[in-house]
Length: 315
Ligand code: TXA
Ligand code: MG
Image (tube, rainbow, N blue to C red; front, side, top):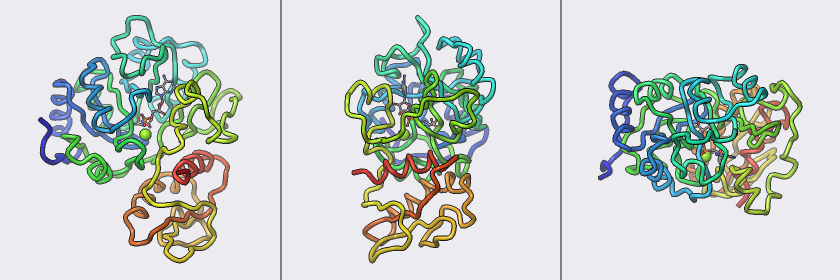
């Protein structure tokens, strides 16, 4: 039976030991990564993975990312080509997810891939996620630790608010560094923009983000997930490119536009990315009926920030 309230333990040996024990018993554990907090479970245990879907209320066609300790562990589960090895060497451990052919016979529950013959996999950099993988000795499936379609969590408190007693343990290691989910690359296509931008990659990519809401077929929804239009949505209406607040709007400012809250008053895009979801959580909890967000330049990290914002505004 689920605990009545989530236990929030600070990162440390006790938290990792309890987390690993729970993973071994097939439970879910919320744990920070360098991007956002993840809801982790043993990727080889179908019941455990079903527990992730249940806790999030996530539609089962949306597959999960698997987290492993290093490249060797990743190669045991997925088939790497030269491009994939090069990306892994450049960015792992770090906020890059590779979609690769699933290795035949790899011990991954089919619920993880939602039946696809590809696997989304990454080697995270965060000490808590790394320690949990090592102590549990498992590959960990972990989506962002929020209820499906909610705002992604960048703090332990966000997880507790969104999932409550549906998660038995939250390992708290403060605010996450990047604040945006990992960049997802399949072949030479970016499926989801993120902390690593197109310009950081060692080859030209085919951009697929001219219109993030144009995706209409079920097949595209699976090969380009995270594209579901209602992803990352706050509960309140959200207006973009706002230069001033209208009556009853909570303005999230940026750069020279000052609001109730700020992404970055110096226009720093790394700071803005790290603060984005936190700012959306605060806006959703404010006493104002609607949310407005100041313009963020559509370049560099701003591409990923605007991707999340346009999704949050679409309802
Ligand atoms: O930064 C992150 O990636 C965080 C942390 C916890 O690692 N995780 C995360 O997971 O954002 P999630 O489940 O919220 O997003 C995973 C994305 C979804 O859009 C999913 O559909 C896509 O990865 N995905 C998973 N497997 C896939 C596959 N085989 N092919 C294409 N996309 C896949
Ligand atoms: Mg998510």
